[in-house]
Image (cartoon, rainbow, N blue to C red; front, side, top):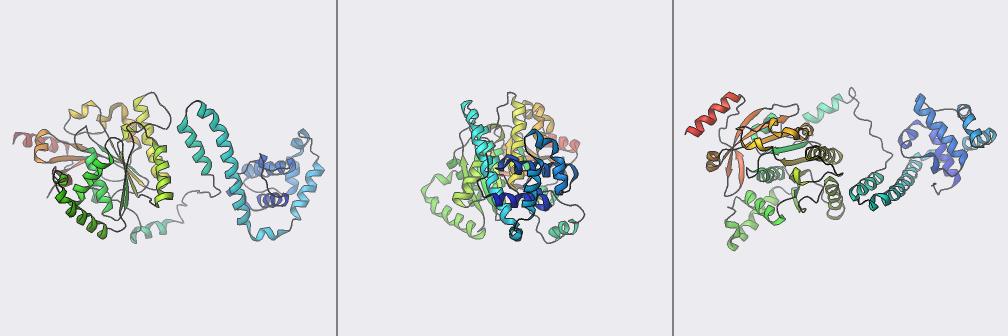
Length: 449
């Protein structure tokens, strides 16, 4: 395979590669020597890149010739031809240097095209083996070929900027449903994080995600809600109740439609930048690559880029690659979700279930994740919802913060649940309980009462 562009442009690229360090830094991972049509050009590029990677500086022409002595003989290329071509490159009209970005752009464009060709060629075998998710992955990586290099944050020189952002309020934080938890998180969760709500079936994981989504929308943010179990219509009905405070049973009456429409209109007017897309996938059919494709389509077809994604729920996703062990698969899915969060600089919330012991204990901790502990290791933040039968009847639940990176954890906040409107909120005058003995005593008093 080769670049189909004029020889002097290829020479210009070689000249920049062996004389401009910023150029070779940006292109070294996307240019392959075989992209050059001339074997001499291929050799010069190989020698330049090898020397740069070994010594972290660029070679002069004499060094390039010396580097190629053995290799040129093996490939039946005379050193005199290499010297002549190096002179030709050196005496090239240097007007191209006035616009090195042009060479960077065309190099990136051709590298992306050649990478995509490779991906399509490799896809044939994967398609024959019905490994379609892997086809999506390698094609996606080919499309992401870029000359832009992110080398990270330089610690000392960025100190002032880091703290200035905090002072100016430029640090993005997403509040939680419960005020005490938001305060302990110094404003909430951040982009690039993976957050869990953990609870047994029927305790309110999905309902919490809806309330969390509404809380986010009330910060003028956009939410993508992915349902893997419940229909889009039923999820939307939950949002209707939580936003409007109209009892869910009343929403079935045609007379409430006008009032609901007015309430939603007021909500949107008050939070004009907010947005919500609800997308249902058949249970067990979607994986993180499916979500990536959805994000791409939403951006390009609807101009919708979510700030937060709700995935309801983790166990109903599939890993991109098949994994035999259920617990290993759950950990892999968690890793893929967090990778998605970092890649798109968004916050990802998902729900997950504890093991069977989760129904037997008063407080669900990471111990109740058992063999699937690997999935909590990936998370940045995790809470569990805890509720006795008596608490259910009273519309109460205990929220236990089981994990919080760089913030307070292992404490409980009481939460009220209005099962008519589906609204969750922190109990009035709720105290934060941190001592497990105090928690047990309070539970005993509650059950005795």
